[in-house]
Amino acid sequence: MLHVLNPIPAESIRLLVFDLDGTLINSQKDLANSINAMLAQLNRQPLPEEIIAAYIGDGAGMLVRRALGDPEDGHLVEDGLDRFLAHYREHKLDHTYVYPGVFESLDAMRSKPDGSARSMAVLTNKPIGPSRAICEALGLSPHFFQIYGGNSFATKKPDPEGLNTLIAETGVAPQETLMIGDSDVDILTARRAGAWVIGCRFGLSSHTLENIPADCLVDAASEWATALNLANTPK
Image 1 (cartoon, one colour):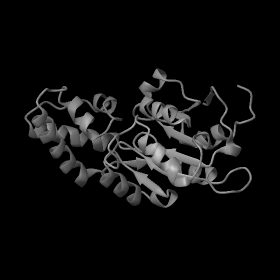
Image 2 (cartoon, rainbow, N blue to C red; image 1 turned 135 degrees about the horizontal axis):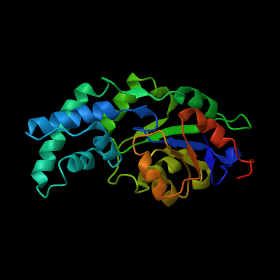
Image 3 (cartoon, rainbow, N blue to C red; image 1 turned 90 degrees about the horizontal axis):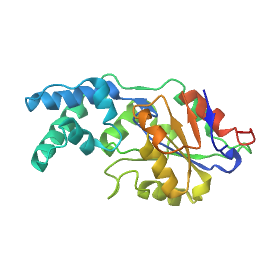
Image 4 (cartoon, one colour; image 1 turned 180 degrees about the horizontal axis):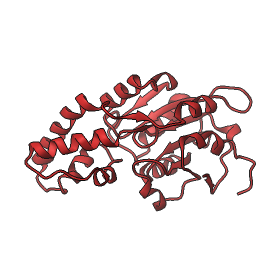
């Protein structure tokens, strides 16, 4: 079900930027399994998958830090991150899948109302290596002119550096840009860049969406195109 706060002007949107985990793909089980593999190697008790899911959104380093209980020992976090990534590289596609409706929505949103093409990209806090590998394996890569990860820049979302870079690369204005994500991190990134934003209530970090208002909230990826085309619909 759509919840529209500010109708998005579809005719002016030229760039679509998508988060990855919890937006395009459901990677919860593979991330949780790799976190618990890391914890087991460190002789720690496993965590419930739902708890680990609540830690996702700010990059692999923060995910590991939270899973370890936010320790002061930086070496422990680094060791945990290395162990997590080593396991995740091998198991990142065991259970991960593209959310229903994603491919159809990407096709539907590719063209503006006047028929001209929109640019589409991925901006995630997930490390760039597994991000691109997952997009390639699941058939997402052909839809995007660029895929940036959490180590593509000196900063991560919610710093707008990555989104600003994509805006500059496509030569559009911030108000011609729409970001789609499942967390307050994505909403804040869009706001800081001056872009529009859709929040995905079906995602892994959807519990954070109430922290900052999005322009529109959706319950399924199949609603993205509808949300974008509600420009002239009353609130």
